[in-house]
Figure 1 (tube, rainbow, N blue to C red):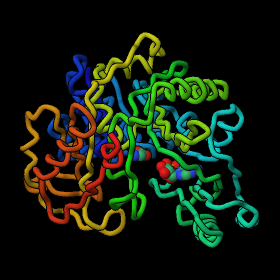
Figure 2: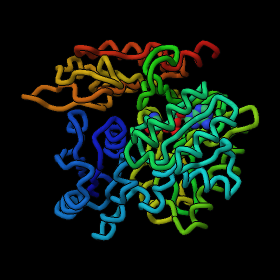
Figure 3: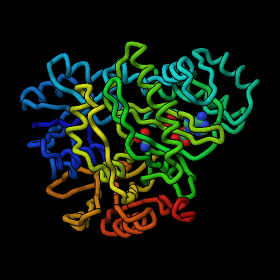
Figure 4: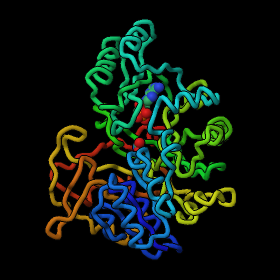
Length: 424
Ligand code: AMP
Ligand code: GLY
């Protein structure tokens, strides 16, 4: 089979790597891809927003399957455009990707179908939002309705912060149209867990659990980022919790989408908070998590092409997923200054250390080739993942491997998975 992967980050590198292990994959293309992906796939420089260009490429190369990595093109309907051209696509259509694309939609869905989540109100008028804030208990979580590069969620400890957030999002339009409407929700406490799952319209197959570290600095300090590191599995995600989530969250979500006439096929990423009252949904994403994919896919034993094909054909009930017992830890190497200002274009050295090293991976998030050299090309640069017998070993291996590569202004958190291994 010929496969085209759309995207250019660490998530797409992990997807391309896993697809390259499939007995069904003969040739992989990636658009636009990056310097790491180029070792496994033919990269073609088409932006993910150019749906017509993507369709032309897929038709010209006669690909049998297109896999969409990022959220933005999904929310804007890339799947619909490619399907109209007769292509087979892994990723939800626009009317289903709204599960991530609109927080107002997802909150209304959860309310209507009794899926556990934080209490909330939604607003399209800033005055009404401000008067709601005056009467509410703190802290409050304020979310822009639409996609905002992972920055559209603000946790407000004081009324002043909440009022500022409403003004920034709705009046000053910090996130553009994504902030036309907002959700104000109750602040939940507990352990966060990410569970990515395959969905074929009816059946949902959750993968193993993972945990992200969203803040930029050690000790969960600093600004929110796309994710500074992950580990898998989460020891807090017990079998009992899994059973509860399948019954009260995963299947009801897929059934709710079908009942709304929005059949969901692809990945649903359930962002959960394990609260004292039980697991609740923090958010849905319509794609693999980044960097969650970098710890979940290296542990997956199934052939990814087979599972994606089963999703598209509605045959997921024939599949059973299995994951390696080994744990995985991914440490994100970023450019100093990320998620704010940072420089790029620095040469990356030491990448060859990962070649043929079983259990070690270096997924590229932001890199490109320049004059035959691999250089940094983003805030998040490399995701260094290692497997290990358990989380303690995986963590030790990942932090050893972090030293194998270098570039100017290399920055990373030193405590990915630490709170877990401290109590193991
Ligand atoms: P999201 O972009 O929706 O994943 O939100 C980003 C982060 O904000 C989540 O990973 C949580 O850490 C936090 N968050 C979102 N909603 C809530 C909530 N209701 N209570 C507490 N934290 C939240
Ligand atoms: N790591 C969180 C996300 O992919 O949204």
